[in-house]
Amino acid sequence: MIKLTETSRKILRAIYRGVGTAVIALSLTGCPPWYIIDTPVMYGPGPDYPVNEEYLLTGKVISKTTKAPIAGIAIYIKELNIYSRTYSNGDFYYWVLKQDNYTLIFTDIDNGENGGRFKQQIINLTREQIENLTVNPLIIEMELETDGE
Image 1 (cartoon, rainbow, N blue to C red):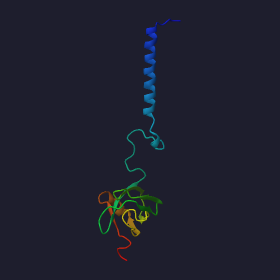
Image 2 (cartoon, rainbow, N blue to C red; image 1 turned 180 degrees about the vertical axis):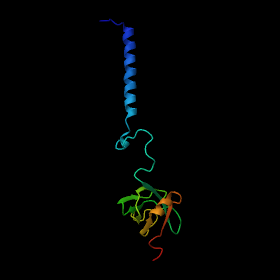
Image 3 (cartoon, rainbow, N blue to C red; image 1 turned 135 degrees about the horizontal axis):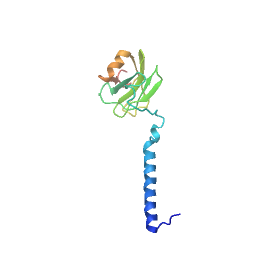
């Protein structure tokens, strides 16, 4: 057995600490953060995007009278059973699977918190119309319930 001096012990402790810190750091950088653990791991260049033959459905919901964006409008895509809301700037973004027709239902569900109570609007889109939305996003003009009454 080799007897180590105090200086040798200190040097070995520093080396072990450094190796331990490096191992922990490398093991943590190799793991994905908690919010993307369910994402499948893909090595190599991967498939051409979009995966699963999807379209990007984009648009903005605005007031018909003021042209101001409307936040919090519920959007339901009937055929795909997708439900969400518009962002604070009135925008919405969805990746939707390719199919021939889409029915979008826009509903104001916040009881007037976004500047009034807007009428429900139903939009029917075809595959060709969805394909063009990446170039020309959909603009939905919603009118207040008191406008036409």
